[in-house]
Image (cartoon, rainbow, N blue to C red; front, side, top):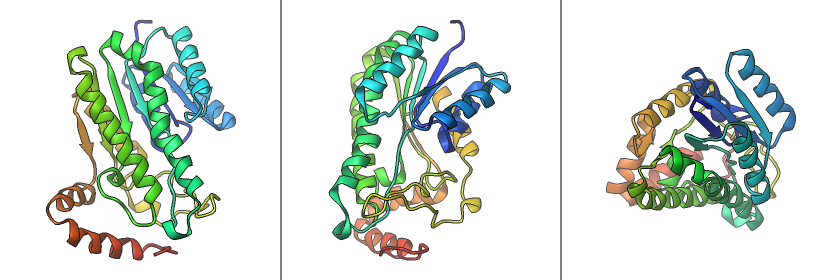
Length: 267
């Protein structure tokens, strides 16, 4: 195939879907995965209706065999991968004292190990293209957030993995980007897990007042194009990371106060 190929996990909605359209309109063929077969089919049709070459595959990133099958379908159809975006992820919202530890395991399996499995499967093609590996992380990967112990643990882990990988791959001319969008309008808060592992079902934020998935996708596309190492979005996000380095104790109280104001906060 002459076109570059962008592979995206968790692209049936939110940031992943927006990334598929953003890279597609900029000349990439798209391959994407998700767990909802119906939504995959719908997004695949929407992309093709927009003139974008697309392949949608049902795959759970926390299951190595399904990731390997996804990679094989991409390899068979396109024969290459130029950009891999590890976007699939889930969140949580509960105090650790009330939490079933299996919730944390599920987040780590999807957010961290899903990134590991997918990167491992697609890395041979990325090495050939001297392409890009992207991880969609979070401000929670820099600053532990109350009520989100499992989410922060998984994102800290993802960032450590990708930073190590970036360093290893310097001699191979492979680009690795850690992207931290900040609060973005998406389904991740609606599907966030509660203490017992059930879905929250609603967002505690006013989704219309935060950055859109489309705006985030455009920032990520430009960061990949420029081969940036780190992308931290929103003024609040950048300030949180900066202030946490300088005044960690003060930030503990500030972050606690901020999340206590959330609707139906467990704090």
